[in-house]
Length: 327
Image 1 (cartoon, rainbow, N blue to C red):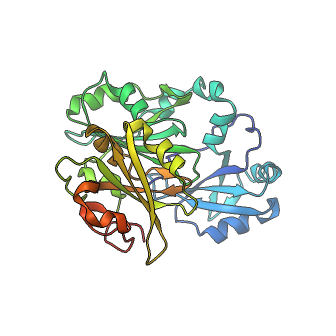
Image 2 (cartoon, one colour; image 1 turned 90 degrees about the horizontal axis):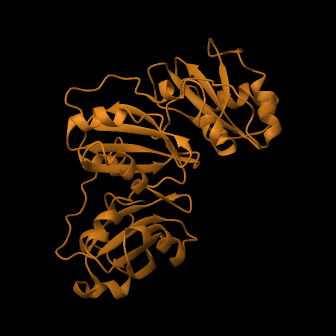
Image 3 (cartoon, rainbow, N blue to C red; image 1 turned 180 degrees about the horizontal axis):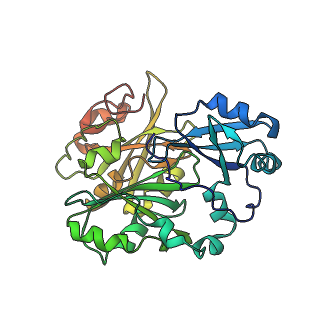
């Protein structure tokens, strides 16, 4: 998917402690996961391969091995031929950051590496953000950009390796984008933030994913409740509270399960109205390794069926088979 961090190639440096993941690039054609596993088979067991979307320079991949010793062998393949190209290999960037954040934060060429590689679209209002720390929150990003201008939308998502965030921020004024790019390379939670220009899209597109636009339910009057789907089977009330506490004071968390599919979902009722707006912006974030979907829901006092299993967005029964909900 479009949640791949852009990478300019190997940046060298010492191996991060316990590193099990490498970056491999670039190829003209999209490589098959099996071909990559075959290429590295002499290095040790490959446990996961993630191939990027197409970038200006082609395709790259992240390859995760069974243990860190396999990475030592894989790095020896630097410069070998793969798919008619001399392959470049590097330690996965977020592993390097986790091990030695100060070195990465002050690395030579850091600012240049983090600055946009594309040209700003005419009257553009949106920036793509990458290489964000797994500890960074949307509020951290809002605080960083506050001096640049008013923010219309921010959407962060956990990357596929689950070791960092990426996302988009959209400003009300195009001049704010010009000010914001000057902050490329600034450290957020110890990690230099990477930026590029992005096309402006409807706000729903950022929450729902690059290829699928889902119209969000209209907010009911006096709404203080959100519906949350896509939760892991082992979800607990504490996990939900820890995720949504930052939005505002929580009155009640009601965990439930679809009678049809067994999928877990829940309702969170807040004390204040503003908390709901903050909560729906967390749609797409990860809870227990599972990407959740957050939407407005009817308050319990307006929803007589909520006691019998809860209702989903717009007061509809919370069944994962509905359009726009996890299946």
